[in-house]
Image (cartoon, rainbow, N blue to C red; front, side, top):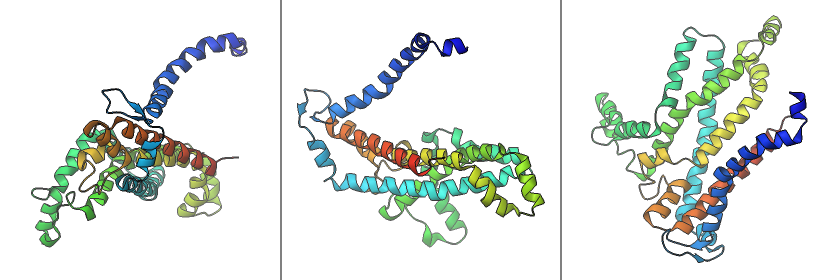
Length: 289
């Protein structure tokens, strides 16, 4: 094995084909999108080169700026609510509660359900006429609180957050739970001998040792929020009146509904750069010695 690893020709033979496939699949579409973003093109005829006009139009578009704000709100809610709930559940389960495997499975079930199914399910829950939420409110005498949850601007965005948070809590919980379980029992035994309480042990030992795991969850959660599409598309399609619009739903609408292929490509490039920049920032912030 050592002779193979020291042979540069052998390394090239194994690595270059994979590198070529990776570049074709990952980088070529990005470069093509960047090129299309400089065109005034409907996706069918011949495009006209217009330079950075699509990007100038992008940042003077109030709907697009609102979609960026919505994606940041999604990211904020995912990081401070979703990850906090996931961490608490992971620490409780890793501490060895009765029925640990059962709870672990139950929390993970939403992760394996199709996002489209989850979107349809919550659409039925929120429905103003026959939805479960309004039916529940009416059954306990709070019919005055019954509302068209996804049909009103002031509630649509928050109601779109909830299914997203619900779906991925189990995903992050399982990653953190696995990290907590990998910590040596000897460390906990030493803390117990020193008289450390469970909460003190969690804050002084478990969470600091989970720093690399938390970094991974943070990046997944942030990037997932910035490029969220499918659940929003099923729940509201960006409405009402762009109240739940995010960059990816606006990009889809520009390309496939308005046939503004160049403008939509500019949005795609923005999403890629946005995700890359935040990933680099998080990597610097959580850089380990």
